[in-house]
Length: 449
Image 1 (cartoon, rainbow, N blue to C red):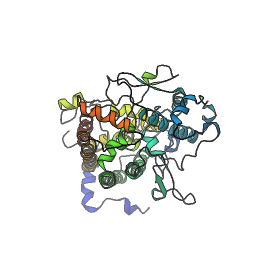
Image 2 (image 1 turned 45 degrees about the horizontal axis):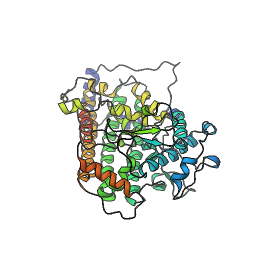
Image 3 (image 1 turned 90 degrees about the horizontal axis):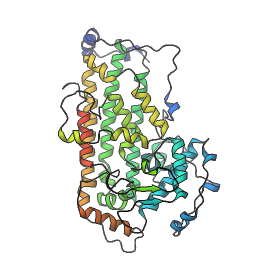
Image 4 (image 1 turned 135 degrees about the horizontal axis):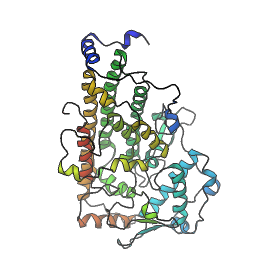
């Protein structure tokens, strides 16, 4: 790289010079004996991010499961498969979780109507192996973002290298609609665009020091790149409106995602047969809040979702009542290695927010990145309002002869009762949760602090 390319432009030079004089930036150095773990140690790839480098291969032999109209009766008679032979292969464990989690949600939500006061029992033939592989993966034993997005794809042309254009999303579908496939593809596209953010974060953490003009100039440019990536993700999310019908999403797709606590903390949930203390398992279902890319961005920008820091503006009364542990809890629904990666980022001693606060030339680029993220969360709130809150006031189409008509009837009855707030698939008060996340992001801005 030409050294001239690393120097600031003339109009930035004075600002950077002042920054160096005013900054109290410490020169971070790493002791030679310390070996920093790389992203690959956390199953994070430089080219594919949190996606595996190739599709998950089908399970074979005793792990293959039959399909058909009588499958609900058959699943009760299935033996409990020993998953120990899979434990030495990460990808086979992921595939097993992928298959079993989808089967659990299909089994639960295609069941005939039953009393709302009784917990639903998931048969041991599904429950025991799912819990076993989940413990080895360090992931919740339920359908997750990884199952619906990160692992739910195949190559269009197996002879060509992996790229987003060569990935076919929606290998498994609940509704069989193109809207469902497009929903997964939109989520995957946002996650894929975030891979560049992971590179920026890694480059920042590997800078030899942060006290010289060249390093500060690079950090400023990378914060500008970060703002552009976040804006791209906002555009991707906005694009869902053109390819996913809100009514189809709410009535045909979203019900399948609902987890054990979808109806709120007081409603009976699921019991995993043969699993001790299964009432304590994490069974909330998939959520965009489980995206490891977005968690990495929050950690990097030091967004304080738990409201531990004294920042301006002060939290509203609504924000104080929100579930401040939601984002941290969502990490339990990620693959364990990805959660370790996030913990590694959080333990890094070089906070970019602190650096920007001490370095005037970095304050505006940092604030721009934070405000881009706040804008993304504003957009997410509007999308959620359209696809969930507004649709909760509608009714499903007639579904004569539909095999899941009973599920639609139960859902419509629950919505018609209207005794509580609109909830996410994990049972949280949706509007309160999204507003709290948006406002926590806004509080990271330096200008007001």
